[in-house]
Image (cartoon, rainbow, N blue to C red; front, side, top):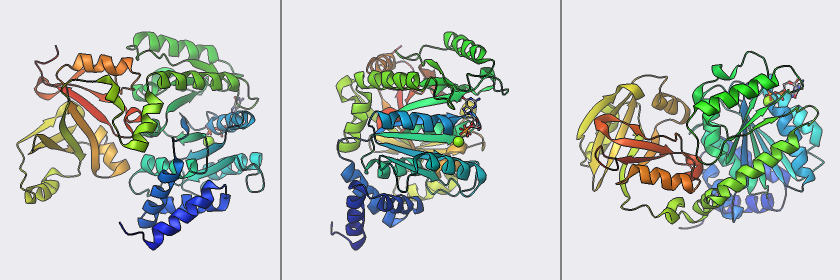
Length: 422
Ligand SMILES: Nc1nc2c(ncn2[C@@H]2O[C@H](COP(=O)(O)OP(=O)(O)O)[C@@H](O)[C@H]2O)c(=O)[nH]1
Ligand SMILES: [Mg+2]
């Protein structure tokens, strides 16, 4: 492939980023935010430079006002004292770019490090969330990649959100910290199950206030009811972000979790995958694994099918899966199939996916003969699963999902047919 003008420019820009030029980094991030061809060049230059691995990405999520910014600020200081180079990405999907919340965060955080003339070991960026092409999570991941090219070893990602946004941030973080507070009406029971489940670590911030114990006992009660999530039980850390109490304990918990996923090959495998494009689970030696289908989220099956029909494919079966609020169409393609997914409700998994990320590949599915064995193998390898239980779908087929944090960013469905592996 011939080197274009822009890819040469991008490589040069990234060399400056790598050498620690903060203005070059700010420009590179802006180019990626804007999207388009120049963004693709900057990203591939960033991937090339990032070398051995990405930084450890730590997501902080929770309700507005929980103290996420204050906690990120306190944790960044601790990491700097340990000699880590830190990148911070603040994402606020509820505010326009120049809105009060984000600006307030930015001023406070930058004031504390005086980034412009100060510590080159830290870089802070706020991310606009309106009108992000390709979705917020993808854009945030790309911005992380560029910042990591400047040699940052830790990325702290702050997301404000209710529901889907927490799940999105978890997709790109290695470690997800869910920040809760005593009182404020956000009883653990009122937090959607899907949000609680993404936490690798619970923080009860504002523990200087009444009620920290109650929140903690609610979490413990919930954990004793829930199915055990592999070998890791998310710990509860109490903090007072304003005085930095508990921040060292949070750091220790994060270190334990990183060691846990590394022991399972998690982080290393993820890095390996990013670098080499090889499957993370190679060491698990799952037998007779075949590609079952590629799931593509579309607005309309009727519209999308036209293209596939010009390719000579045809819809073999179509059905509505009520409990998932999705209509599916299967198109055989060689040994495998394409599955078109059209939401039947806006507030469904696929509906929200479309709103966030637009049409595109939603998941890939592999078929295994023995699904229970496949799940056990993944659990013992420390692979992160979306749910720790095999579910039964249409036609009695059985399935579970592997979290994108373990696969290099793609939601992976593992399926077996009804009679197998029982
Ligand atoms: N009492 C108390 N206040 C805190 C604590 N952490 C943060 N705050 C305050 O809570 C408010 C919201 O904090 P902020 O970090 O902006 O929350 P965010 O919206 O989650 O990012 C600010 O006024 C903080 O000073 C804490 O541990 N204890
Ligand atoms: Mg904040």
